[in-house]
Image (cartoon, rainbow, N blue to C red; front, side):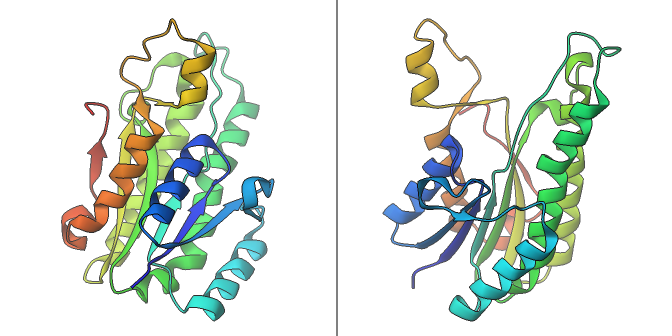
Length: 218
């Protein structure tokens, strides 16, 4: 049976790779992005009611969601800790944490209705080892991880799971073409990320629920 997969932040390079992967597998993919680019549904994930309306619409059409891949991201940094901008923190909190909260809360009932559901976020090494120049980013990523782990706890005993995939940074073909001299050492290709996401269904929910899976060695 075809799975119903929601990809939040689907217009970006990582989102496009994930969408392609699940479409290749024959799944029903619903891509969401604030801009509405590349055929995505135009939904502002910072608008709580808009997200709840989206969940209601998908529930009426499909009755469940088998996968939610949350790829809304962003980065801001500074040269030193003292130069950290709290305006950057406000932006990153909204992008990395608030959108995650809205999506997970609105879609939890639909994910619970799945016979084999997965909720996935992509985090960064910085969340576990922050440096002075990325204090705001690392803190937002750590908060997103904590929220996802709390969601995982709520999913214990169900057929669904919430998982964190960890990267140092992501790379795609356009980045390589723009900087052919860069080795991008330690970066995870977006195609590798997409494969890792789909591979989560090859393991039982209890094996991946609440787990941080490191992709940096890939």
